[in-house]
Image (cartoon, rainbow, N blue to C red; front, side, top):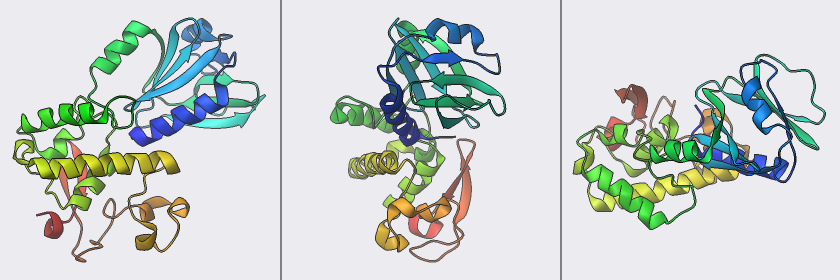
Length: 265
């Protein structure tokens, strides 16, 4: 499932491609056809990311709301686009570019009130507009009030919007934190480091359009060129890059978390 860095990357990209254009919106698959008619031919103002959600704002105060989920995927084309491939839920056709969307969990047209309801259920997004200090305070309040494992709490989208399983593993490994630790037992200094590292990791993800947690020195190559698990320190790895002990997994919040018991125990 794409994490928050990816939705912000896509929002910037799609704003660059389509802002200020009257888009033809269709649903080759058919499931989105009725909603597509509500915005087709309308001027798109911008695409906005909040957590793992995307909102395409149109001139008639309608929005396309997308949550990619585990299987959602975009395919970009030049305009006019080729024949659809697979079950294309939504097709956007602009002046020079077109976009196909297959397999999203959510694809619907909503109004501003519904957008506010969606956002109201989310915690602060480290990458979204707004006071970073205010967002940090809200998350700290949630952390110190919870007895859940800290590794579970950071995946809770009502606490922090946009964090997924890869960021979680890499974040706790970087800080040497045991992900099983009850959240309320995390001290303020460690939380401050956690927030700082998370924001930095997510901003790096937006820059490259992919999660990259290793440094160029660690990788022995420019970060932009890294692919697959070469981008990570611990996620999906067999051994710890610090102590060389085997990496283990533990299930927290119904997701498998990679960690090093030697460095994080």
